[in-house]
Structures are given as C-alpha cells and as structure tokens.
Figure 1 (tube, helix red, strand yellow):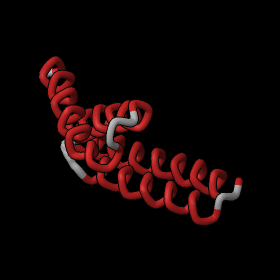
Figure 2: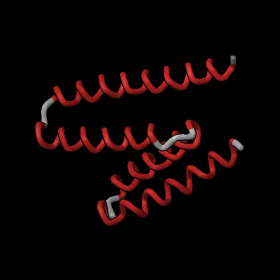
Figure 3: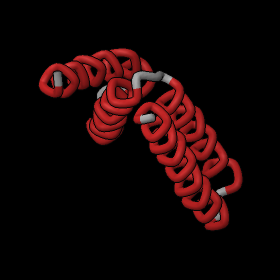
Figure 4: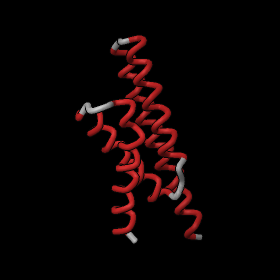
Length: 104
C-alpha cells in the first residue's frame, strides 16, 4: 500500500500542474513549486485519509501569498511562520490522539 500511496501522489502532482498551467503559463519556477505542492498535498491526503489538511494548507498558502503582496512587510512572514507551526502542531496532535484512541 505504501507504494500505491507514493505513486498516487505523482498522479495528484500531475493533475495539480495541469490545473495550474493556465495560472502560471510556462514559468518553470512556479510550476516546480506547484508540482511540489501537489505531490506533498497528495501524500498528506492519502496518509491522513482526509482532504481537509491539504485544503486548509492550500487556503492558508493562498491567503498568505496575497497578504504578502498587499502588505509586503516582514511581519507577514513572521505571522505565517507562527501559524504554520501552530497548524502543524494541531494536526499532529489530532492524528496522534486519534491513533491513541483507536488503540484502546
């Protein structure tokens, strides 16, 4: 099953690139970042069994990119880092406790 999850993430990555081709055109740098995002998002979805972690990561990614364009200050970067760390801790704790409760 782990091979299937890994290979499925490549399919998600390819679909993610196809969806974003209209947005980024032929920009290799942007498409590479999009490919990475799609691959990791596919892994997150398959490993957690839920689209929610990836969707929320995508939402906040777009939100902070737009905030960086609008405000263009270093405080936005600091807030982004703090929120990402808190988000990872919350998601990690959720799945850790979910796993503990299943073990009972």
